[in-house]
Image 1: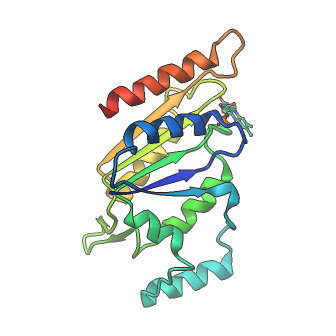
Image 2: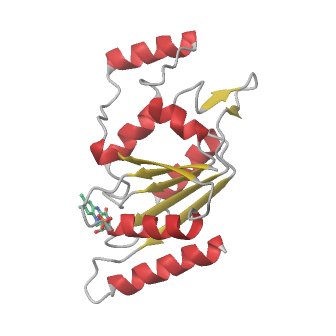
Length: 191
Ligand SMILES: Cc1cc2nc3c(=O)[nH]c(=O)nc-3n(C[C@H](O)[C@H](O)[C@H](O)COP(=O)(O)O)c2cc1C
């Protein structure tokens, strides 16, 4: 099985990454799992400006997706399971991850539209797991969760699982205990 870990954790001792590692140990430890990791802080990610967008539109029109230029989208489309790990920043996630997603959301590689205007699946992913940790708590109507739901809808990924370690920076809370509970929840679901 081909899987992809998108590491959008920025801090060296990221607690989100610790949870991601626990998930991978529990769920991706088996033989025959080919793990590809992308540590976004090490990638040359830049926003789509006018010039890059126009070039991309031309590539899409021509169906010309070179491996080098479209590596993020092509890897994403090939993975059968995808883990995204990102800390909760400013009620969302680090801008690095948005830059990466701009490179991934390529019509013709990761998704396309049918004649009826609905998304058509052009990727192999059956499950996307999103792991985050937050200093406080995600609001009841957090846009983060609906964002990932909508994105999985566009990509026709049937299963989305979100794990959250919350309240880590709140005085009086026990972060280690919160992280342990989160790890146990992930491992129980994977069994
Ligand atoms: C730039 C920045 C923005 C943050 N924004 C929020 C926020 O909006 N809400 C919140 O609850 N915590 C916020 N935090 C706290 C982090 O979510 C929390 O410390 C998290 O556990 C960090 O994950 P990490 O250990 O993987 O880096 C922020 C932290 C940073 C550095």
